[in-house]
Every structure is written in structure tokens, then in C-alpha cells.
Length: 145
Image (tube, rainbow, N blue to C red; front, side, top):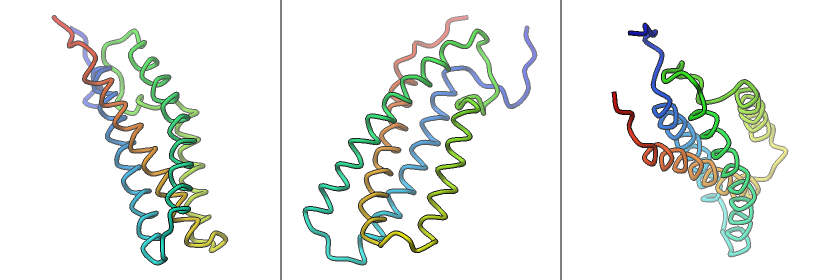
């Protein structure tokens, strides 16, 4: 019997953790966009811009979720540390994007309408990536001992 730390989980569980992290991030970012939108008169152009941002980032996050799901399921060990739902490069990108987004929003460089359509589209794409990780979680057959 192998001995694992308290912080080790099955590979399949890493997919669930990734789904939760991405969905939580997406909901929060979309919430910021919607709150920004609520300060303005929204037109169909703003909705189309949000949809365009969603499509661009949605394609990127779809490819990323496929890549990370393959990486996670390709681990040789059945149990991995729970933070292995990301690789180092992904953690660096996440820190850069979060820091840049917080700075950009607080700097006042972007008008509220830009924050509205961009964050709404980006947040929905992030949330979709979380859902894709969950779909992969449910598709993986349970291990039989």
C-alpha cells in the first residue's frame, strides 16, 4: 500500500478541482463585467462585443482544457498533489492575468463599458472551461481495485 500525503488526490479528482477553480474564476470575472454593464445603457453592440470576446477566449480555453485534461490523465501515478491541476507555466500565466486585470481595472485606463463587455465575455469563457473540466471528470471511468 502506497503512502500519500493528505494533499494527494486521484487524477480524476484533479479534473474536478480544475473545474471548480475555473468556474469560480469565471463567475467572479463575469460578475465584475455585469456590475460594470449595469452602470450604462447596454446596446446590442455591447452584447455582440461580449459574444466576440467569449468566442475568442472560449476557443483558447477549450484547447487549454483539452491539453490539461490529457496531461492530468497522463500522469503515471494514480494520486498527485492537489495543486497539480495546473502546471508551472499555467500558474505563472494565471498570476500575470489576474495581476494585470486587477491593475487595469483599478488604473482607470479602461472605460467602464470596455470592462463590461470584456469581463462579461471573458468570465463566461472561463466558466465554460470549468464546465469542460467537469465534463471530462464525469467521462473518466472509475478505477476498479
